[in-house]
Length: 330
Image (tube, rainbow, N blue to C red; front, side):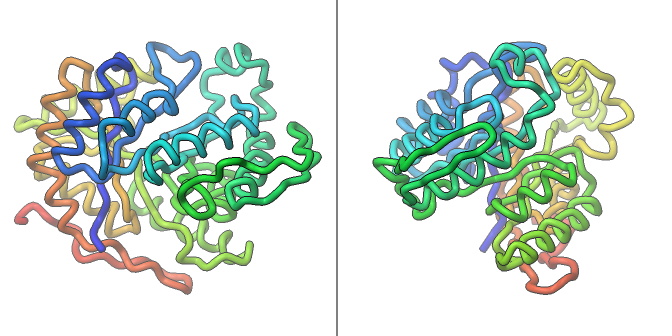
């Protein structure tokens, strides 16, 4: 097996652009297309279920990942129904990425959800959704949801439901990934932190009675590539500063792969060597620069990453292994 490479839609893109972007991304060879979401944020934001439904209608091969659905903002029964409907609409190509959010409290206030409850709500929702996806007729009396003999109808196309990508870097996120996830998808991590975190995730999976190999490593990578490395770095800093409303100068060199396409590919290969079987490329650029950046990714980075073998998932504690860290000569 080889590394899977996905493309993240630019956060402030007009949803009407999704159809053409999805068609093009599939033609360019990306393995999956991803969309994030917020109800409210510092700038324009989409809804992942709606945008990916549009993408599903115009693609046939690519998988479709929500990265990330802010789980506590949804009633649990509605979340399960929407995920199932999108899985059926896409003929079993939907992957559900889950996160707790909380970095922008106004959207929680708008949805009537207290920020301090976001973790507990997410844990309860994952417990319910995994059981509903499996076809159970569920009786559940929880702190935030009551399910009284409800069964999903129809069920998802994929057995046991869409694969769950659990996002986040916190201890709680790692615990959720180990207990429920098929993938762990952190961001703003070094390769060393990814390797160490993945071991912790698999320790949790093992403690929960799951195989260590049940959880695949992934990385969400804000990325900018340009023939001039200085231009790539400036583009990333400007974009991320606007998205997150903070100065990224101290973080970019450590966590954001930038530079020439070859430099970016080599840096991303270090994450593969650390255990990432999937790489989600999030272009750190403006909406106007997005098409050109994606073309650069598709022509100069995508084939290099897809040529790498996936890391071997070990059943005992220890580092995963991949083919090699440097791929600039491919």
